[in-house]
Image (cartoon, rainbow over all chains, first blue to last red; front, side):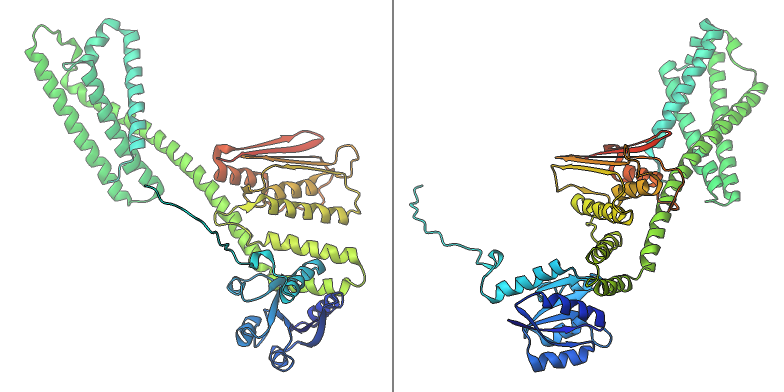
Length: 140
Length: 353
């Protein structure tokens, strides 16, 4: 089971994610926040396994929060419009979802995390090298 | 002074034709005298060369240094008149001196009859007449050059204008506002009506593509993205009309890696939705797309509608054809067939291997 926190300044976005999460058996909501600063405190308190994080928020943006929490938990970014600034954070997050978020796209993102957590490593993450034993006799 | 060699070559060719026609007319009037007159003292090849060089220099200076700058107001009128006067004085001096030299040479040559040479007082008039003639030809050539130049400039300006309008439109729509609003409606509706919710997603995808940053570095997009967007547009139109539209879509994609100029195919499809009668059970809207290794062909035809339901947004067929020829040159073929009942467009692009 993965504990989730949703941080988004718009309540309807939280409602939609809640709806999606309710349909996935391995996800559990432990908290939601429309205030990013409250959300940050919530992350420190509850230590969730996954945070759904909006980018465009007043006072503290999702990018700021991402910098503050470091590698403590996994993050899925949610945003209305793909920004250039976001590209740089592509590797630090599990995935990012564009609003309105379709359920199937949501499922793909959380499934990715689930397979990583259960040590079912996707092929692309496996080591890219093999050892080849060779015997060679040089004859010039 | 920067000299444009293409212009010089063209002027030389023009002068040669001129010389030829003079020769021909003179030959028709008096064949026996012609060869002798044109050869002068130096022989035909040299006199042709002299004539062409003089004519090229004269026309080049008059067209590109005097008349065109005057038309475009690139130089002050006083300077232009000065250049022109100076040029004609130099030219006159040169012509007069060469006339005197020729006269002296002919006087030495007693066996030659002197009837071919003009009397001294009329040479002035002949020269002035020829200068007037040169002025008239230069002026008409300059007009032609300016006309072609203006046409090119106008096409470029129009293209820039549409691009600016499109950019202004993109800036007016705040994407954050738009997609957050769509997300809000989607969240409200998903528990009530699956199809409506799905349509909102479709609209969001369409808007995201149209506002797009999906273009590659050279301004093209992958064909598959463009087609997905096109299918979204078709699907949402079908839903708007209760799936009553007669649309026949056929694709045969053998090469998925093709990149094309964005929104060209879409505009053609949108045009058909705007102006066509798609309810016709026999011939509604037909779209056919084929790609092979280095070729894309796109055919679209529709029955014409009676009244235009939606206003045209001005980014029309002319713009597409312009954009295509600017991007692909003669590698694209764009044909419009506009009959009484039907309207069809056929587009073929060949890509270099």
